[in-house]
Image (cartoon, rainbow, N blue to C red; front, side, top):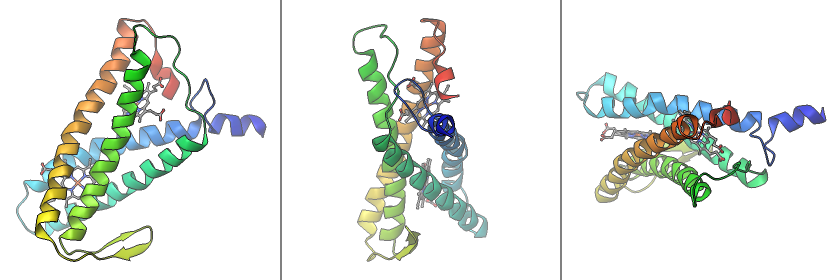
Length: 180
Ligand code: HEM
Ligand code: HEM
């Protein structure tokens, strides 16, 4: 029983099953969600667009809740330490990359939610139906954040993957194992 709990939770040297599961579910979700968003905005205004937007919102809200759960979990359990450091500041850069990945995920999802709400539409968030007063300007501003944060996320994911490749091919270290 103790061993089972230990394999589910993180400890100072290993990611547990929960962290691994959330990491890969989010990554898989984003592979669908980012292209879906770009595809959606180019569609003509008809029922298909409304349906695809509803799926986009549903997936987006799932990613939002998953990110919140991950962050709460991160506060409650230890984050595994990095082994060694190839150059000065390496651990700091890695932590910064992780911080901004979470920040971008929250910015995208919260701005998407606020874009819809200020557009005068209602959404169910935390099981509660929310309505805000229509405000076109705020809706457009939150949408700009939504788009900008998406480009930032694509850049951060690229750096994140390059770091794994850098470890593998230049430092001959397989860090991918840590999250598999
Ligand atoms: C991590 C989650 C999400 C990602 C990666 C994402 C990504 C995107 C992308 C790439 C676009 C196209 C931007 C453009 O080029 O104009 C977009 C559009 C949009 N997103 Fe998201 N989004 C996410 C979550 C959400 C959420 C939670 C909502 C609302 C609750 C939302 C609402 C919208 C809306 C309304 C549009 C514009 C659709 C239109 O103009 O018809 N998104 N999203
Ligand atoms: C596509 C979206 C992705 C996002 C948003 C993402 C996000 C993150 C975050 C936030 C962490 C830090 C976890 C924590 O300690 O709290 C992390 C860890 C990690 N990710 Fe990703 N990731 C993504 C994709 C990938 C991919 C495709 C790979 C492999 C090529 C990868 C490899 C790793 C590894 C190896 C770690 C552990 C780093 C360490 O502490 O040694 N990730 N990821």
